Length: 337
View (tube, one colour):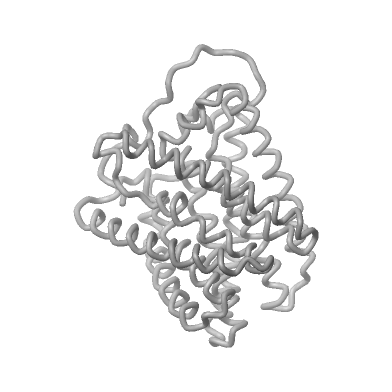
C-alpha cells in the first residue's frame, strides 16, 4: 500500500540529470501507456457488448483499430528512446509513473493479442509472446531495483498488481488460442500473488493514510479480482468466477463511494489508473450475465461500460495533450535518452 510520503522519493525521485540534446522521442514518457491500456480494454468491452446487449460489433472493432494504431505508435516512440540510450529502461522503472507505464505497455500487448485472434491467430501468438517477454523483463528489472533499494522504497503499492499480477491478462488471449495449461498455471500463481499484495496493502493502509496525489492509484485494486474472475469463467470454473464477480462488485462500490476522496488532488497523469480497472470490471459483469448469473450483472456491466466510455477517452486525451506539449515527461519524471 502507499505510505504518507510526498511526491519525493521513493515515488517521484528525479531522473539522473542529462545534458539537453536534440532527438526524436528522446523523453517519451511511459505514463502514456496506462490510458492506452484502458482504451484497448474499452474496445474489447464494446466487442463483448455486441454479445451481451446485441449492439453492433462494429463499434468495438473501430475502437480497437484506432487504439491499436495509437499503441503501436507509442511503442515505437518508446523503443526509439530506448535505442538511443538503453539505460533509460531501468531509470524509468525507478519512479512510480514509469513503473506503472512500462508494465502497462506489456499488458496492453496482451490485449492486442486478444484483438488479433479473430483476424490472425499467428500474429496473435507472436504478439502474446513478445508482450510476455517485455513484461517479464519489467518484472526482473523491478525485482532487482527493489532488492537494491532502501526499505522505505520497497513499500507495497497498487502498481505491484500491474507488475506482478498483470500476467493474468495473458490467458484472455491464450485460452482462445488453446494454451490451457499455461493459462491454468498463470491463474493460480497470480491469484496467490494478488492475495499477498491485497493483504500487505490492507495492513499498510491501516497504519498510514494515502497522500492525495497518489490516491488515484488505489483504483488499480479493482483490476486483479475482475481479471481473475474473467479468466476463471473462460477456463470454465463458474463458481470461482462468480466469487470474484461479487468481490469485484464490493470493491467497485467502495471506489464509487470514495470517488471524491480519490480525486481530491485534481487531475494528474495518475488518473490513467482509473481507466483499465473500470473496463476489466465491465467485462467481468458482462461475462457473469452471459453465464446466467442474473440481471444485476447485466445492469452493472452496461452501466460501468457507459461510465467507462464517458470518462476514459477524456482522460486519455488530457494525458496525450500533456505529452504533445512536452509536459507529461516533466510531470512524471521520465528519463531522458
